[in-house]
Image 1 (cartoon, rainbow, N blue to C red):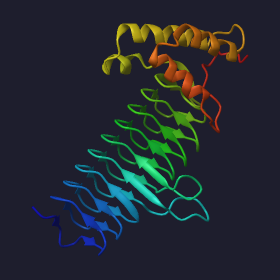
Image 2 (cartoon, rainbow, N blue to C red; image 1 turned 90 degrees about the vertical axis):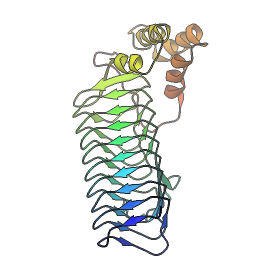
Image 3 (cartoon, rainbow, N blue to C red; image 1 turned 45 degrees about the vertical axis):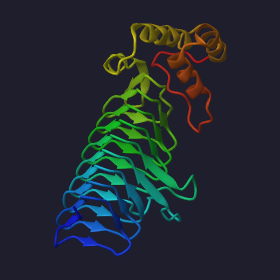
Image 4 (tube, helix red, strand yellow; image 1 turned 180 degrees about the horizontal axis):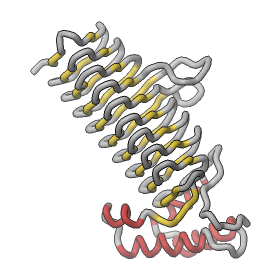
Length: 265
């Protein structure tokens, strides 16, 4: 079946449409846009620039994808959206810039609720959920299966590790470890995402190891560097724990998110 294009929609010459694409009333699809098989633009959707949308992705009314980034002096490069993504009303996603790798990337099976904004050069993993009006500043990174609560904002260059959960109305200005749970006016760690770990099939042993490692890392004895070495020595063969260590050791422009009552050492 060929694409179904409403008579009020406008598709520029140079756009590439996959099989069974649906483009609803008053949509705009610019040249250079690639829509994969079975993509659905419900109505009043704008997609322009070098934007690739993966198969079976559904985009709801008044979403705007690929518009110029909110960065003075830089034009947009590319935006890549994965397969089976749900993009709800009034979502805005900006392309990457030459100031970074030139691409904003959204993984597969993400769910972006009403009013979500994803700024230029962000990297969002697979199966990420962002609740209503959650916002990512430029260059943010969000790992697989992370959950970002409603009205939450991430500062530019901040990172959230995979399987982490961020509470609603939280300002994330520092990096949140994988499997972590954070909330507050300015994000503070308040433990691990135990519900998410159980929901996604982590074993009792994995959860026990993560809890033990968390207690060591954020204890108030010794220095943080010493406690990292302690965790490496105790859990070097435990993949989930070592994923936290690798996250902490990566180069980053942001400080690490710590618990509320943590005394830095």
